[in-house]
Every structure is written in C-alpha cells, then in structure tokens.
Length: 287
Ligand code: NAP
Image 1 (spheres, rainbow, N blue to C red):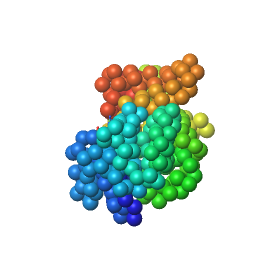
Image 2 (tube, rainbow, N blue to C red; image 1 turned 180 degrees about the vertical axis):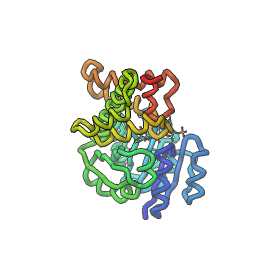
Image 3 (cartoon, protein in one colour; image 1 turned 180 degrees about the horizontal axis):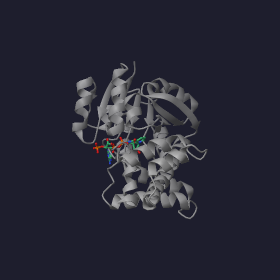
Image 4 (tube, helix red, strand yellow; image 1 turned 45 degrees about the horizontal axis):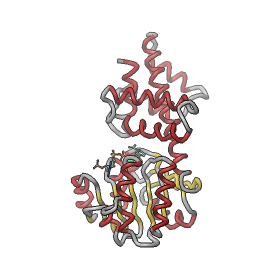
C-alpha cells in the first residue's frame, strides 16, 4: 500500500480521498478550510497543516481543486506548496479540471523538481466519486501513468490515456462543453415547449425516441423537469470550464456556441444560482 497525500477535500476530493483510505492506502490529507478534514481523520487519514507537509514522504500526491489559481497556489506557493515537499521521483497527480496551458506549465515546474506530473481529470460527479466509479482522462508519460494506475483504480472504474500533458484537460473540457451545451439547449427547449402550452415531459420523451437524443439528455431533462437543483456539479464550475474551453479555442469568435453557452451559465450566476446544480439554468427560461 502506498503513502499518498490528498489535497483538496471539496465535494469531489473528500469522496475520492475516502476511497483511498478504504482501499488501505496510507493517506495524509490537507484542505484550505481545515474543518473539511475531520471526516477523513475519523476514517483514519492523517491531517497535515500545509500541502508541503502533506507531500513530504508521499510516493503520490493527488490534488482535486477548484481551478488554475487554486492549483498554482497549492502546488507552487513558495513556503507551503506541495512540490517543495516532494521527493525526487515521486508522482504528482492533478485531477482538477484545468486549462491545458496551466497543466503544461505545472508539468515543467514539476520536472524542474525531479517530480513526474500526471494529469488525471475525471468524468463523473458525486455519485461516481462516492462509488469509486470515476472515469479518468489521463495525460502524461505512459511510464508515469503506469505507476499511478493502481492509485487511480482505487477511486475510479476506468483509466483512459489520451496523450501528453494538456491532452487530458482538452478531453475533459470537450466532455464538459458537450454536456453544458446540451444542458443549455434542453433548458431553452423546456422553456419553449412550456411557453407554447405543450406537455414538455411528453414532448421530450418523443424526441428521446429519435436518433438525435444522447445518453445524458434523459438525466438532464428528468432533473430539470423535476426541479432537482441539489448541488452536484454547480453552475459556477461549469462556467469556469467553458471559460477554459473558449480560451483553448482561441477566442469567442472561434467558438461562438461555446461562448453563448458560457453566457447562459454566467447569467445564471448573476441571478444567484452559482452554487446550485447546473440543471438550475432551466429557471432562466421557465420562471
Ligand atoms: P468544490 O466542492 O468547490 O471544492 C473545491 C476545492 O478547491 C475545495 O477543497 C477548496 O477548498 C479548494 N480551493 C478552492 N480555491 C482554493 C485556493 N485558492 N487554494 C486552495 N484550495 C482552494 O469543487 P468540486 O466539485 O470538488 O470540484 C473540484 C474539481 O473537480 C473542479 O476542478 C471541478 O471542475 C472538477 N469536477 C467536479 C465535478 C462535480 O461534479 N462536482 C465533476 C468532475 C470534475 P475550501 O474547502 O477551502 O474552499
């Protein structure tokens, strides 16, 4: 069993770290807001005061943080950053959804320290994190992916190697762009159907019987029609991902549909829905 540091105990990270503990690994955790570590400590994890302290002596350091800024802070802060605490030859596993440019910059900083970086963003939300059923979209050296695979398998069901550093972020952003664009269109269609006096559930069931329907659309429409907005993947996180996707495309002009979908999520944030589930965007079109 490996010595593993886990940094970032938010909605996803707390569940992922618990699965590492349950798998029998020796886990040290850290979170910016310390209270999030109590449940992990009760389950048997050690708690560190800084990322650097958590990373000292770890063979693997896993992060699950909000965005590029959080990742930069946690890995690179001069006094407290995780990279400063890691031994040469240890493996850094970055699982947050980030921009490809930042992932590549982090890879270079890790290499300077003799640390191998693997990016391992995930498809799946809280239920999949809880059940260790995440799907990993891994970018980096094949040898590093090989080393990390047993650690990832304790938290996930599948590990897909998609290319060099940055490729994982691109695949993850592509996945979320497809998810969010469908969600925004389905939300607008529910608004349109209701405005025209149609039975939206019945109408969409008929659409679902045609080849244009996608596997995720059923769950998204069920949640929106039922008014289920309990946070799983909040509006503010998918808006962040659309921002990275538009940047990766080069400009809003180069990706007008992505930019428009981002606009829908930004509008939801301005109406106080930032921390509600992404499905709450339907309220923009049905209120
Ligand atoms: P979350 O619940 O908001 O947790 C975010 C984590 O980042 C918390 O531990 C938070 O610490 C930490 N953090 C934020 N800013 C920080 C900073 N400046 N310095 C240090 N720590 C900071 O988010 P989540 O749902 O777990 O998502 C984590 C990542 O996974 C995101 O990149 C997200 O896009 C991605 N993701 C999410 C889902 C999902 O369904 N939720 C699915 C797949 C991927 P505090 O507790 O102190 O705030």
